[in-house]
Length: 374
Ligand code: GLA
Figure 1 (tube, helix red, strand yellow):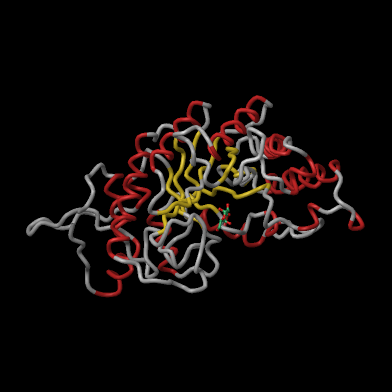
Figure 2 (figure 1 turned 135 degrees about the vertical axis):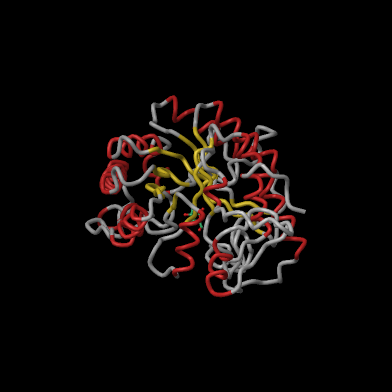
């Protein structure tokens, strides 16, 4: 597939933000540009992550407006950012983000209300350095959620209410909850409580449980996926007002695609919506996390790796298309290979100069119902 480049500065900015989605024949002019969100219009929302607009260039913001119709704040709505000490709320960055999104007709997906990390120390400490009691932990979590979800009431589409509560290593409980500070202080009920308070504060918000690797083991009905099913069933039974589950999607070239589709089907069977909430597919290794971030690149990314990456993205979006009825949103976790927590792993659809990568074209092609570009 040929990409046509117009000369001049305008062309550079356009090439950086949009796909020239169609083939150019000798006679036919190139068809209109198309962004990611338009290729999936009517199916599901397409998002990116970032604490916009501060620190973003005009070209980056233009890229966002062209390609995405929902944004998740990467950091500015996390508990530590919004509520660093008991009597202090810092709304500035998050309010500016919500305002920019409203001005640009972009929805906000809020992230997150309860997590074991990036949370103010005060929240999980008792008075005078004593271990926190259950009652005090409940009071802290409740007041945090009511204040924060209340502040953004009506301005966000929904919340990741609890983030990453399932442990990576198996313990003996079906839901395999992480032995984190919330669990130790309150017990397993903290999840359902958090959902109830979020619903009380913003009854119209969609409320999701969000975690990584929860597709793993889906085909074999084991591992973190089986734990997530046990957890979600229990929460539903306990009356948690939960609408959906976010599969983070920090994937790599050898991710088991079959697990992704089976996990989606399993969550559908519980009557839940599904979002792919933090999608990135590293082109550099099998790791699901971030590495060599400071190295700023590590080994050069080969053409072959980029092609394989495009193929993984293609297969993933084919799955998402098949399940479009239950998928509410697919959010890329970052804007480009440099605006990414996995920078150095070339995990996104645009390179560091915001030029669309083969993966971008593959995603557009699936959205438009075309076969993969060779
Ligand atoms: C997790 C969190 C995100 C973010 C990433 C790293 O996936 O849910 O908020 O911190 O780790 O960027």
